[in-house]
Amino acid sequence: MALSHSLCALPRRPRCFVRTKSTQQSILSAAARGDAEGIYLALKHHELSPISVATAAHRLAKLRPLRASNTLRQRGLRELQAPILAAHTDFGAQATANTVWTLAVLRSTDEIVWESLSHRASQQVQQFSGRHLSNLAWSVAILSRSDAPLLMMLSCEVMQKVKEMSPQSLANILWSFAFLAIWDSEMLRPSLDAVHTSAPAFNSRDLSNTLWALSLYRGSETDGFDWKRLLVSLANVAKVQAEGGLHPNDLTSIAWAFVDATPLQMHWLQRAAASPSKDQNTWATEPTEPQRPASYEPLD
Image (cartoon, rainbow, N blue to C red; front, side, top):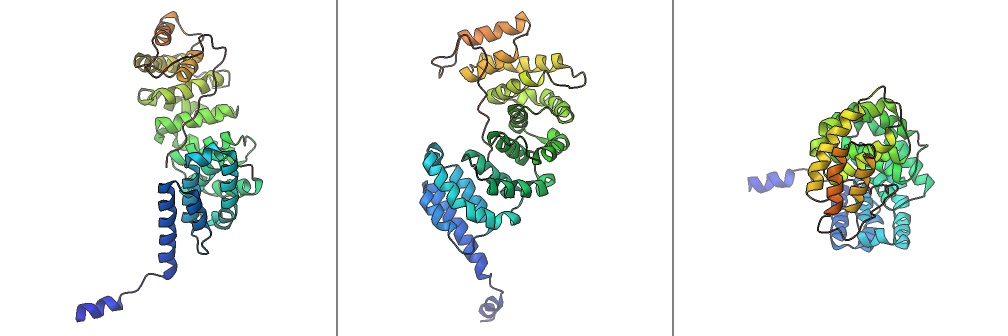
């Protein structure tokens, strides 16, 4: 009897907490079913938390049918606009980074939503992890926001955290700034040093994206940076990757980066071209310039 009485005396969770948890679960369940309409229905909840808004946005952007259709993308952006504008001032760093990523994936052109999230990201940029910075840089590049004041703060944070970044995050950062044709020598130097250190851990896409970016960066001011040392390091990694077979786009980007490489370095590139991997059917045998590599979309 005493145990039962004690349990009754325990404080109950606020009803809003229970509703928030229920809404979050509804969003996740709908996303698991690939049900965009279910997510839209959850977004109409009157007590929608910032976390639920960010989760809904992120899960919508991961639905392949929605991403493949401009009509569906526009519907998704319309459904997200009001919840994002209502909740963005309470977003945490991850929620902000993921929601900006959503705008990029869905190719948003909504200036009001962009300005709101960009301002929120500017307030939080020092809290961003290396992966958050990578998400943000990729999103800014995809949305072609090269004039965003956020970029200067982003560049400063990259300088501080570049040594902690994974190969994928580092490759995305370099790809994004190259895509925007932004040459920040103060950020570039430590980033290039990090590439040299992390090179052995690069996979073929990391390598392709990084080398494509470096083929553009090499004309920028880098205070006498030893490009030869870096390219030799990346050439050794590319040699290992080529022996296992490279996707045509990756091979083209890698080859382009070594246009002035030594005959020895070019030898294994020629071998890779002659012996494509099993999933390669055709590729351009005389590329004049590589396509921009398809940067990895940030992870959850």
